[in-house]
Length: 393
Image (tube, rainbow, N blue to C red):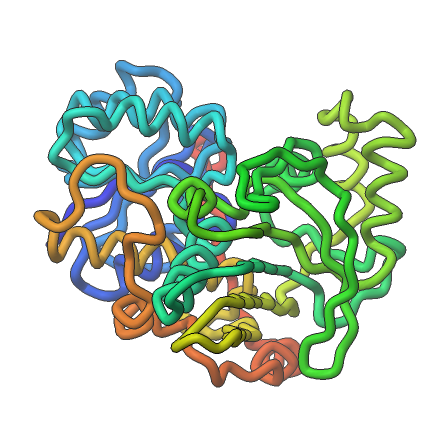
């Protein structure tokens, strides 16, 4: 078995732990500093090769002890982006592989610095966007002799929106605010540039349904750097239902909430609910020349919630956890191919889709799965409360 330490027992860490442990190929330690958080997830999974641990991963000494105790050969950070630089440095010190889910550009630069001279894999920006979207785009790019434009679009949306934002908080609120508030990288007229978030608003039609898309930070990952000088235009935008961008501009810019992100986080978490009935839309459009003719190729996929280990998991959980788990599995089964800092576009789409974890991205998932689980009351529980020592007494 491969031994893996996961930091963070939140929405995504909980599913990554279950996917890896359920495969029977991984011995997994799931850690969180919040009392009983990891233990509740482990209890819900009920797998003998999944173990909880409670400690503060931002404390170097505690993290050192956890790595030694778990025997980890790889560490996965599901923590906020500002923790990742330190965790990557400690992974380098222990000579183990490192993976994270961040979209934050500064954090990725810190991981790059920590990876220098290592023969282990340091792969930040795993998951959906960045992550899978970069892998899918790069696969299409290989089909062209020369490039004109590359458009990457991703949206994680409620299937049945009924609030003013037409949105549901299905992943990290801090990550969402980062996307909406930080500068965005793109390539325009052949040159790398920064563009403003919540700008570049456009309409996009997918399978006959109208959406909007606009600039958000981080989703392009390292793809712009990889293809600078080879493409005229390249950008990443987030897909939402029409009207969402206008509401977020009011909050972020009009009411200056971008300067008070903690208050904005509290507002969103108090007003916008979670749902397991969501859909993830992945859209890539590459335009360029093939055999002298101008052509376009698209990758379009709608991924819906799926049942894993007898429980329903949202589409954003499935896509993010499966994306990281597949990349981890590919690396640990061929570590000699991936050394030092590894970009997501170094992985082949075909290899990821053939992977036992990447298969969740294959087309064919049904939106009826979540409706059937909800109506029959069989969604299961993603975590089970544990009894504290004080309660037992």
